[in-house]
Length: 242
Image (tube, rainbow, N blue to C red; front, side, top):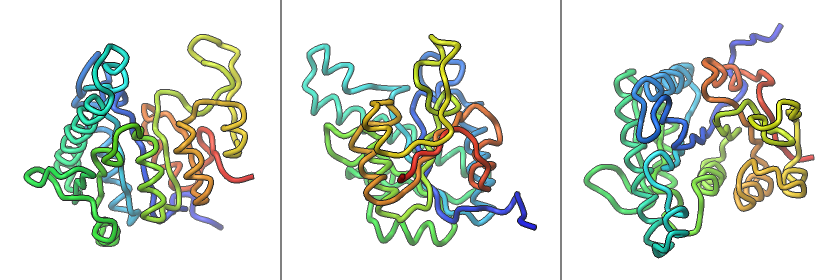
């Protein structure tokens, strides 16, 4: 009989929105949320699962938002990348407080606070049991952190990409506005693209599809769901090839 507590996946990439770190605040980082998420990641690492993390910067700065107000888009996106570095360093500190080994690797050079992103070194960190937090997106403007997560998941050959959001999966309409919204248990990448379901941006979805990396969307505020997903439980919505 299969052990339900045994991990189904060996290497996973967790995509966290910056907003997930805000918790009870309107801006910045809620220490309670940060340490709870770090605790769950540290527990996965102790089970022998190789964990990589990509965190957005929306809790601190949104480049696209200021671009709409007149700021140069490239400048705004560079500022957004720096916000992701702040979040990544906060996660590193929280993980180390949980006695997990962690490395932050940045797509832009910021050597005094973290390592440069080098694919082979990142994989080696994972193989040694270190949690790797990828900061600064792809290092290029006009690309979202969703696209950065799909890119890094592809580069490290992740078995699964987990997008942790505020809702427990993908719905056919906004569940906050529509109490009758239907949650999908399973979708194909092509269905997401055709129906414009807004799971992630199209670039990220296509990259996952073309590199055959299944994507699961869960609610990060449901404590324990991260562990259950990695152990193979059908939580949230799975997006995979048809």
